[in-house]
Amino acid sequence: MKLLTDAEVQRFPRATAVEVMRRAVLAAEHGELTSPARLHAADMTFTVGGMPDVFGFRAYHTRNTPLDEQVVVVWANSGCVAGVVVGTELGPLRTSAIGVLATQALARPEASQLGLIGSGMQARHHALTLSSVRELTQVLVYSRQTESREKLAAELRVAGLPAQAAPSAEEVCAASDLLTLATNSSRPVIQPEWVRPGTHVCTLGPKEAHRHEFPPELARRAALVVTDSLNQLQGYPGSHALAAEDTTSLGACLQSGSIRQPDDITLFLSVGLAGTEVLLAQAILQKR
Image (tube, helix red, strand yellow):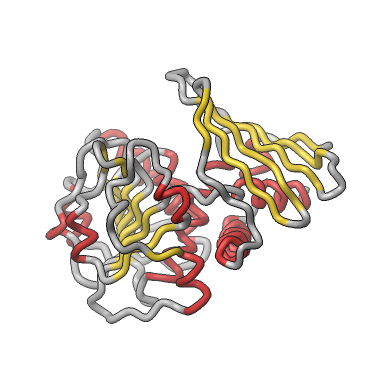
């Protein structure tokens, strides 16, 4: 059995992670990936998933603690535990890879101006993973704390991205055709009218009916609303803010191809397709 930590996860190619997620999302669409809604119990959250050649689970706690490490356990088809991945890096890598896969499927091919609302780990991972598969001509970062947005912009510049901090979320929206919301906010951090025609929007943060980082009215401006897991969306704790909206699975878009007009707004709701952590952990374990 192999035990991997954040160091091994960080060395895994981001573009390869996107392709692993493509395989997982299509497998779920074809009924080949078991991906039930997550389970919450005893201050723990569990997601499970499996395919004919691999199965396993992810577990993380929901307590207010200094660290938020998670564990992903992978079993081979023989019934032996093939490996365990522990740390904080696999989750954000998985989430960014699914979000970037959605961007590749739903955004205009020429879209290259990324706007980040939020300056934490998810925002950083999303920008780095997106830049591994698409050339970005601009990255604007906004969060409420000036120091935080300037710090992330500086980190992204060190990584080779054309990143700058922006003074407001409205300015980020006005200058972006790829917009990612990655906050912990319980209230909308943008207004729907700020999003310019032709923009692809990805929301990674809170989406419950009683707390959500995006304005639900944005879904009514969007030509297409997509999620990685309809099961997770319908089983969202506290009810998803867009549970009653017409939503398409990302797998269906990948399978049939997304047809969009240049001015269409598209909205991706990242909710976490169960089993994707297991497949990504398997890929990392095999590469080691």
